[in-house]
Image 1 (cartoon, one colour):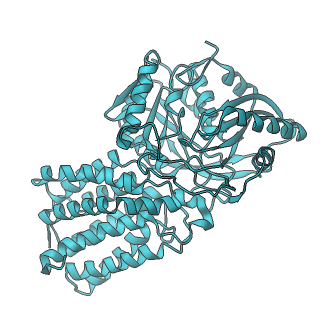
Image 2: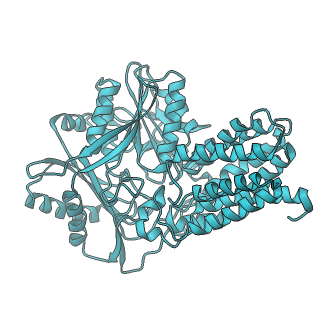
Image 3: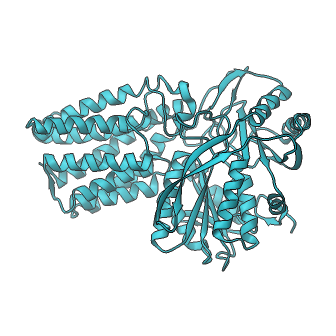
Length: 357
Length: 215
């Protein structure tokens, strides 16, 4: 393994220290326990948005902390969800009195740790709601798995909910909006190579020279199949058609009910895309794939959407939710409405993402 | 009876078993998960290991509670909340105890398993640590009913745990990250079941050492 690291156990901390030094005007970092927060936190009267998850997906989440997006991010060890004490400390730091929304990706570790954090924060009298992102169409059968993974839509939900919070939406309005984003977002990814976790020091899985893995999650875990390598256009076709043809999806999600002070089951349903829908198209690098290749994918994605009567009205192309050094990409399509478009276009100023300011 | 000192020995032995098996657990996880189970468990148990000498004056419940908080705040992933919850519930089940009878151990195994079932929402046969903890509890309870002493009952429980661990190999994963592999999870032993087996095996080793130097 060749990587720019000192000691594997210092990787996350040293990376965060560099980020804090580079963006001292926007963010601050605490280490005991670890979290990244807006330099001007808490913003009084504003709902705070917190996300978190394993490190290794940069710039998600810490790169999205700042005005118009996240108030805090809790990075875990590489590919390992953060712990409830990190989330609780971040919550105490950024709560501006209007409550806190957790944006949680559907991975068992993230879900369990955020559930414990929710219980702890609520016992301290802080209002907390959470939304679960589960947009990966590669995971088919919700009865026999943990349900769909949270992948690319997470980034879009953080932007849209972050803008809503900045504009003064209240906590339950933002949670409703977040649910709308996750139920209208769909993603699928592919890997051309494995990634290498610093603490392990060797590739997580092996792909032959002529093999690609279809339907991966953001740690390389597969969802569909391993196939022979194909052209960029063919790969784009497979990913896009899988997303567009994905049927309605219903699942039961556990959400914290403030009034009952307990977890309740909520049923959420996705509607499939239809001709005439307005979409945000997001082509994401898994970390090791250059922008030039992503544009090739986007080119074909536009052609497929035109053919199917889907209008791409916004796009995002680049490495936003990555898997360390993995080569590959993911496509996310999000069905937009006027409110979501307005919030997408709203100003944002974070270490990794800024426009309008 | 299991003494408070034996409990401390057990936790120390388990911490060292995790350290010894760190790479093995990580390899098992690389096959069906995200290759960090050994690394994460070792990070948490190393921390527990350094704390144990400061816990000599605590009762068993207090020891378990400290272990729980340490695991929850230092492991992360799914293993942090699951092992943390196991020890937290175990702590409640043995409140105020300086030593444990057969019934106390049965009670703590039961409470620990219930906590893990609630937190993880997995069931027997989902290819998780429950496939080790559940048969071990059942066998332990049965052996106690038959009048077996603690070492004998634990021997049977650990044998059932080992079988449960091996039986996770042909299973289809339904929880956790391995579940995304679907059919391809078949044929690989579950890393969480493996670490849970090591936990019970370590307890048996400590108890047997007392009973007749079998370690």
